[in-house]
Length: 516
Image (cartoon, rainbow, N blue to C red; front, side):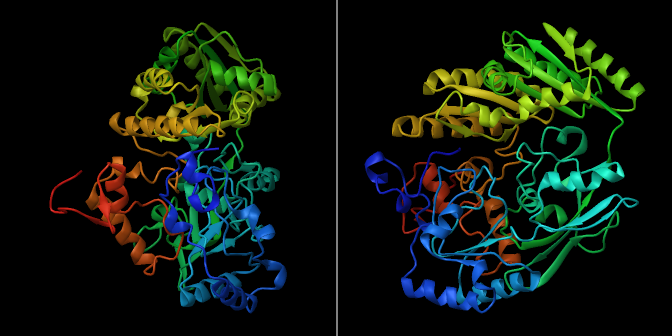
């Protein structure tokens, strides 16, 4: 669960509970005749079993993994071939209907939250692995293919797909492209943007566009990195070519205990400063280890204030040398205990605890708010100390689970959604963490995207001119603004309201005065 703000249209008690209407523009209900018009137009494109418009059928699509934001879509359509996607987009363009592309719905930022007057374009039926070329080490897949399914299909060739989000058993590669997802091994092997060679997509006009190629480079503007992480706001992805990497002969995990979270945070920076780039470098504090140990029984040190998990992979000789270097740095950094996995089963067990931190949080609290900021590694200790102070300030507990190697933070703020006051304190807690991430030289997101969750925090990081540039890029791809509207990029009026300024009719008083 995440940001505790729910559109008033979907919460009859919203006003009484004190919730705001920041997303009222996404909640405007269509007239019944408008819904009938859209349904009839789409019925001419897809079979009836691919079209959902009754409330009981559309309810499963009302949110993604960010369940605090819910909105029933007007229509859900599940095309089966690319030509149907093209026709749907053309129809929506002609009818001026918003379109929200959706994969498996595992996003944590509300990026696929529906528009009440729009169409949810589900790509769940685009679930085929089209080809695997073991010599070129590439796979050509449809966007509805699960992340882990790519590695399973490549395993007979001694290959796998490196990015491994915690939700990889369910999340789709199309969603990974939308959010630029990472995972516990992204430190060494990179995020989605580093592991995708080519993307085929359709614009709102139904035009086919291709970004990148199967070669190391392609002619023209390099727009592949722009497309990856664009959250479905520029085009709808229909095919992806990903890189595959050889499965390493051996991998071992070093697990280190620390009696202080700040010391553990500083140890991360010392590992990288020593010239060591582990395959994965993760951190969990005591709240997290206690929660997951009861859940997976991974053998974590429950007395430690924090633990680090550092993985080395490669040949047996490479692993032995790197593990020895990691152990030496960790002892010098103040580790109170060190364990090294002695089998593949134990390695997977160590990682299972980290990958199950989110569901395990449910053992400690009815709800949690998962943050996603990124800071320079040298400031990890400072950030952990600041979060500890915020726990006292907001009277809420926070589990810290970090992709520590690249400074990507995933603090889990624990709260009870049935208590409106706790809900609002959790939101303020999260906003302060993101603001501090910017102050420490980082950014408000690492791999979860902006969606609706962090749209206000965008006002903290970016200037008016930068936001205007973002809108200009979107208009270049999507002139009518119909692809996933109201997400990721805040308007000037929204930023002004976030800054506690009065805005009337979307216009600022005295706009000539500098505000940011």
